[in-house]
Length: 364
Image (cartoon, rainbow, N blue to C red; front, side, top):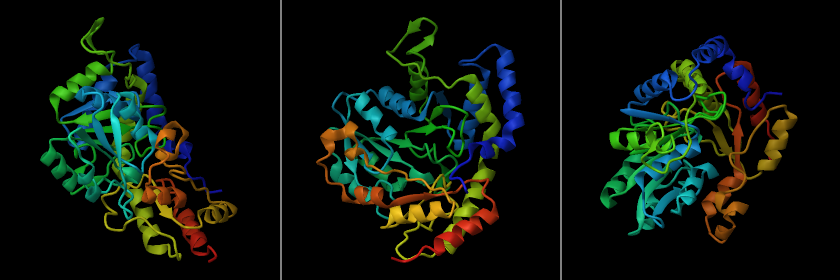
């Protein structure tokens, strides 16, 4: 079986350095908000091209902390993509803000800039973009709309480590950007981890307080914050893996290029071909109207696939009050998407076999 993702294989090239870094933290006796975190924050800010990086516990809380730091009035509207993972949108509700759903571009599957302006009202405060599958959103028209209406742009780049847009890296395309370093990400920790990047000094400072109970000085609390801190061991592990991110992303691009040029199946919709070198290819997501048949066929061929994601947010039980919404593009996407194996440890022989097997998928 070709696994969809084997984290043991992904981390094996870094194992000795990870063990050394973990032991260094263990022996230091300092495990929270220490030098390892500061070093990673500085390195990741440099990598993204931003002035500031604030390490937090996970990607969801990175979004939550950004929204909390902006202190929008309860009931304010945040435009959100209808096609995304639920973690992108949950923080909006936590803070008593109102998500306003925007359908995706049917080609990129990302929030469609052409549909944003019609959703803006006097209560709108921010646009949340999600760089799904490893492709940055089309930020130029989105930023223009934000400037026109005085809105903040918040990016969820949890799947876009190292992706670029017009030469600028994810993390430096919005007013503030949330990252997840969940183990399956292109830059993955060995547990939950996240960060916020920004060029706004005041925002970064406020998030530093908010992630630590609202405190900048122990036992003195300026804000009603939360406990959301990137720990020293995860920071040290991320520092080990960060220098290898571009090389691993380049391998992903090579595989994606082969898939895009060599897979030829009727009714199989491939990802866009226009930005192979800018996308970081966290996922290679195709669409087929006979998804279940294709998934079973590939399983029988011992190729593991995944579905990102099988049920849209507005159809989840957690959002039952939104089940009446009509979001046909989003719903069709969720009925058809399949993620093929794509990671830097896939061999050329495995890629050959995947391509050959898919191309032999029988027509209905």
